[in-house]
Length: 492
Ligand SMILES: NC(=O)C1=CN([C@@H]2O[C@H](COP(=O)(O)OP(=O)(O)OC[C@H]3O[C@@H](n4cnc5c(N)ncnc54)[C@H](OP(=O)(O)O)[C@@H]3O)[C@@H](O)[C@H]2O)C=CC1
Ligand SMILES: CC[C@](O)(C(C)=O)C(=O)O
Ligand SMILES: [Mg+2]
Ligand SMILES: [Mg+2]
Image 1 (cartoon, helix red, strand yellow):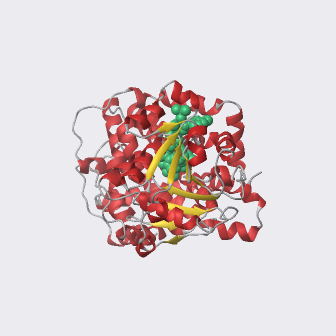
Image 2 (cartoon, helix red, strand yellow; image 1 turned 60 degrees about the horizontal axis):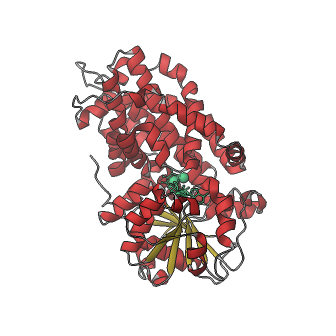
Image 3 (cartoon, helix red, strand yellow; image 1 turned 90 degrees about the vertical axis):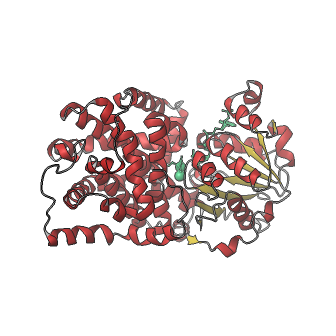
């Protein structure tokens, strides 16, 4: 039964709105609460491996448990753990002694994994998640003596590790399940775990399982993954099939363009990204973004509504039951995209050119970030949480596209994110078809915007556009949070 739908409305609203930026002083005990405790990770994939490496380097006792077949067949997860010097064993060997069991298996497996490990967990042990789907959407009930916490990094596993290695960390949401904190130790454990990932350096939000699920699903379906997938498909087709851009050049502009453009977001928000354009290009990008926002708003709202009501999760669970029929079909279609098959040209594109030739891409990022942020806030998700799930994480997913294109990006994110990404993109691509056909001009994408033309603009128009950009609420909360994250990696 859906947990969120089972609680009274007043509680629903409280849980969705649970969000507090935690002070550095609250982490002064570092990992102490978990020091000397036996921490056993279930699963050694995208998050499991990288979080385990971070916690071990922070002085904690980490080992892994995998299903028997993975150990016997020496699968990739077994290699990940053993090649990094971790002890690995079966559930029966590892779980009974564990003080904290970290469930880092795919969300679609949780309803199988949790009952299997729960019966082996010792009395008074703790169980941790990095995403609350199983608790909130499936209503998984956990034995009453077990403490249930969540430490949810706001970025892909590989970056959780790379940020740690370079002395920083990935922002996290932490939570304690209100139904499972029998000894009152949940927050101490969650804080120690977050400190072990160095999440306290960029920032930790005290949150709830509900707020994390309802914001995480929305971010990944729309701006983070769905929108970048949509934008890549539409921009590639427009450039190659209509404007005669060489395919290998279009691939390069898109594959590395999202990363280069969104790097500007990371440092100075939408304002800085837009300031990288010439004045006429900035006015044009704002115009395109406003038009797209108008068209896409109902779709963003539909996704958020379905996430809140539980319709999204029940639809996805039907696909789980059907052996991932839709997911596998959509994954296959992504693999068949021309963008995936054509190799990027080795012709140089300078950092500035990505902006000058990618005005439509800039507009798509502006529209997507603002709409995702606005839609999340409109249902009671707090601005800081909405910021992490929109503007903050966009450059991190763009980094994955630069390294792996779309197909592999979708394999690195969680199964839940992958399903939601295709679901959104399959609707958004046709939704923007008329806009792409009638509104997008040759120098909006692929060519240098306004090349050879005057850069003169009307003062009043520029002032209006700058106001539109700078006064958006995502910019206010973003500036505050970024002040606290000034050490994040510079990619480009
Ligand atoms: N991917 C990401 O970057 C993010 C993920 N999360 C959350 O983290 C959690 C883990 O996701 P992610 O890291 O993507 O997961 P992965 O798909 O990378 O996890 C794979 C691991 O889970 C194991 N596994 C798969 N099925 C089972 C099963 N039935 N029983 C036991 N072990 C199994 C695999 O082992 P085997 O070799 O046996 O298949 C492998 O070790 C999810 O809750 C997700 O929402 C949160 C933030 C970001
Ligand atoms: C954006 C997708 C994500 O939520 C993440 C990396 O944060 C996921 O579930 O993979
Ligand atoms: Mg997710
Ligand atoms: Mg996420």
